[in-house]
Length: 255
Image 1 (tube, one colour):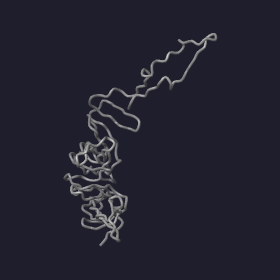
Image 2: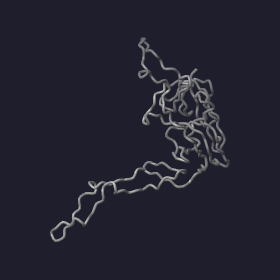
Image 3: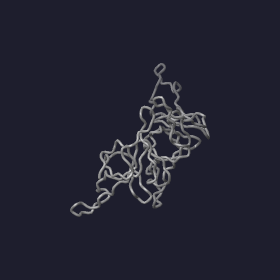
């Protein structure tokens, strides 16, 4: 967090009078650059920095052990160039949604059963866009979040090979119509967003009250209708569109 500065103009004019004469020595204001309120301790070369909305705390810690069903993910660096090689400014760089799992919690208790975290250290994962708490550990950006906030595990660099977790499904999105029924060619911005696709992979299912997995009601190969604005969208290496969403966002199976 940047230091808070107060200028002489912001402080205002103050005058003291003695026997009808203003005393110049009653109050001496230092130059604006000298008035500072420092609320941040010097940052250590290595350690933990927790980033909040308006605070930055830097205690001298070098390790972090997640608790319960939480995992610690080392965030993948944001893309600095487009696929065509154009250098992106910081404001235009897309926020990464993936990284490597570097630590996991001991799991949680559901009913009478202990349920361990199903993700292994070293796994490449994709997580919900606004999930977790970002921390800086040993000069690298990390995210600590619950296991349920992780969308899937990446077996390869291609989205089509993603392994969805919990009650989520991976769907290959049907291609949008290029023309209207009257034959008018549609641009990318005017194409209607499809809400139909083919299930590519399904997760192991949610946990019941005893900590056992409940199989999902859909299977790979099913054509489904889903909520129009649900889920997280991804692009495959060949440009194919995919979406990962919870099974509760599916509205029907088509045949």
